[in-house]
Structures are given as structure tokens and as C-alpha cells.
Image (cartoon, rainbow, N blue to C red; front, side):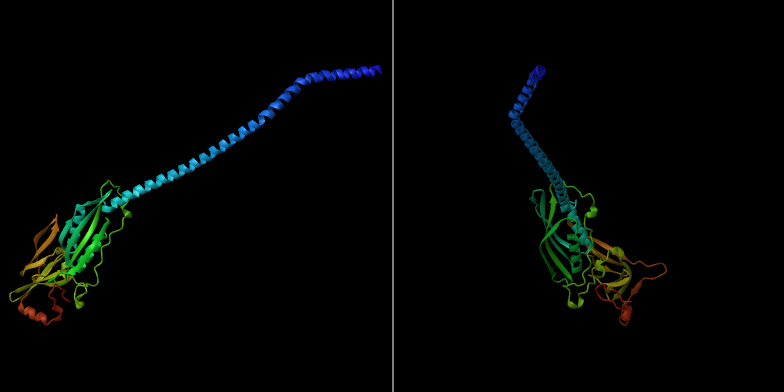
Length: 338
């Protein structure tokens, strides 16, 4: 019994010693747990705040990235719009100035045998990066030439806007019409950018001759301009006719022979026959150049191949021709059938 009691006391003493040794550790653990219990809510709250800040920063970054992409897209759109604006400003005049436009009007009018009676360039009206230049024109010629000239001129690359227009026959000049036209041309006032490729511009297609001339009598409305639409370089004299004191010339163009009298029109530059003899035809022409009308005299001489004689018919020949339908010709430069 005593031994058992002694052993129990020793065991209790050992436990007491271990307890004393563990007490600081337990105290430290308790203090740490108490500190964590006290500071943990604040730490968790701070962590939540930091996570919220991080999430807000991520959202701001995403928003900034989206705004940057939008800004880049807007910059590209603005650059494209500026380029299109530059091209549009260039297309207003197609890289030309007003003197080029006036020269083009005159050259195209001569090509169609027209008489430009008035070409007035009025004072320019500024509109920011471009200016509007009103033009006033009065043109005289045959209906077919006026229509083709108008379609080709207004169909060019540069921008033109038509205003008031009138077309009426010329008194005392059958077959002639007069066109009055107001047109607005445009010219850039700032440096412009030429398109990278001119292939994007619409192609210029020559206007087709009208099938009907509404200003001619009903029986003569089919277009037959005779030699008035043929360049003088493509006309040659192959013979002449004489009756009493009147001389007429036989002119060939495009394989057809035309009989021409004094006063008939020949050539595209308002040419009028003023003299005919057995060897040549004198033609007086009018054309517009450098802002003024000019006059010149041209001659179509007899061109006879070697070994052949020129065709010269006197009054007796004329009477024989009257009885021969194959030799009949009209009196306005019309072709000889056959």
C-alpha cells in the first residue's frame, strides 16, 4: 500500500512538472488565439477591401482597354474620313483649274462643230474649304452636236452642277439651235490629295449621236450632218460641177461623195464654203481659243492620182446627170447614191 501511494505521488509530481513546462506554451497559444480572434475580423475586412479595390482596378483596366479600342477605331475612322474628304475635294476639279475647264469647253465645242457665243466666268463664292464658280454659256450649233457636247462635258470627272437651261431654234438658220446654260463649277481652296489610283474614276464614254432631231421638220428628223461633222483633214476634192456662173464641188469623205455649194457647212469648226473653182474649195472657219474667237481660211484642193483626170462637169454634164438617178445628189452636201 505504501509503495502504491508512493508511486501515485510520483506520478502526480511528474504530471505537475509537465504541466508547469506546458503552461507557457499553452499561454502563448491562448494569447495568439486571443490576438487572432481580436484582429481577424479587421484583417478579413481589409482583405475584402483589397479584393474590392483589385476588382475595381480590373474593371477600370477593362474599361480603359475598351475605350482605347474605341479610340483607335475612331482614329481610323477619322483618318479614313479625312482621306475621303481630300479625295472629294480633289474630285471637285479633278486636279484641274478653271483655265483647264475653259479650254476643255472650247476644245470639245470645236470637236462637235459648235459656236460658243458666250462663256462668262463669274465671281467665285467661297464655302470654307472650297469655292463655287458660276459659269454662263451660250452655244449655237446643230442639235446633235449640242447634245453630244453637253453630255460629254457634264459627264467629265470634275463636279459640275447645272442650273437654268434653255434650248431653242435659231431664227433664220434652219437646223441650228441655241443653248443657254448656267453651270456651277467647284474648286478646292486647300491642298488636296490625289487618289492613289485614277482607275477608280468613272471612265469617260463618248456620247452617242441622237437618233431624232426634234427641231427639224418631221420628214427630215433623221440625223444627217453631212460634212459638218467631218474634220477637214478627212475631206478631199474629187471633182467639180458648173452650170452657168455657179460652181459646185464634189467632196469625198468616208467613201461618200458630197456636192457642196457656196454657203454650205464643211468641217467641225463652223466652216462655211466661200469660194469654189475647178481646182479647190475655200472654207472660212471660226473657232474659240484663249478667251477669244478666231477666224481662218482653209483650202481643199483637187487631189488627182497620177494617170487620172479630175472630174469636171459642165452644164451638159449636169443635164446628163439629171437623167441618171445614180448621179443625183442633194443640195446640202448630201451623199451621191451609188
